[in-house]
Image 1 (cartoon, one colour):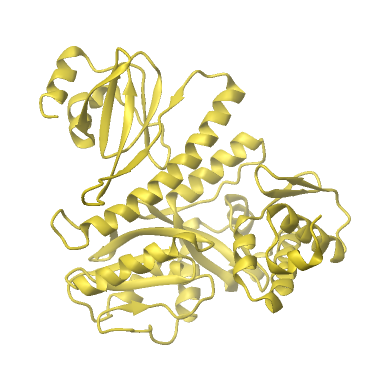
Image 2 (cartoon, rainbow, N blue to C red):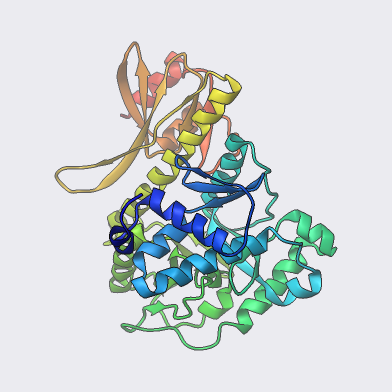
Length: 397
């Protein structure tokens, strides 16, 4: 164990796990506590798993005088989650919508599958192509996700619960947005539900912007809104999202655009001043999510004994312009899960024989690609494109 002086500065992950363990013990918990350094989690008792990544990020970014309170609040919150179920009369006033990336939910499912823990059935509703809304019960010390078992116990349909949660969040959302410059708006609540207010489209549509409303939720504490024709506002949004890459509790840096009452994933067209900025953010986010997904899928295939290659999502940056793009490799005679990249490189006879754009690959060889329902999306392929398909793909490469 490192010296107290060093712990006061910035503990590493192992030291932090010990600090959380000591805090749990100090709160009176006598269950067994095991530390899994590889997953950076504590296993409390027989099944409770406490992942430490987010709270560690909060801890090291906080002033020293606030750190003990962060530990205490986190430990108390987790202990309350493992207690008795919340009665419906206590839950309803505290139901709130939770906006997260779709990858958050699917990767959580894979983690449970790989680690052999109980998989929670968390009902979700799509919000955009890459975002979804779920439910939580807000408590003073923690946010407790609502699972289907809760809704069944409460005799409450998901749609009705979501409407109640929406009303509750609306009632908490008084006050104006901060406006650093005309046409750009920042949320000011900083209550862990700023990103969730994306669900309140009617809270945002009246904001005075140039063009359609474009929004981004890089983390739980940040909601940024500007207009699709406001190039300065979009540039500020892109810069804010890029700066937030290392912030704890990320959601998504991929923006959305409001079309009537629906959020749609937004990517400016080629030639737009911020096309490259937002494409870079998208590729960085996908690279992170695909890497985590690949690791979990490979661990799962090792458990099941399946001989499946999980192809890498490869981000690249051009030396001359700095523009970002991505590719993956489709290898002959290998069962493979392909990520959805900008381009596909075809690997045949121990070499790359050419590349084609993803859309063209889906058009020509889509009959060979099957979606297993993963997010970020992958496509299962067992066969290599025929000589005729390959010729059609590479003739435009």
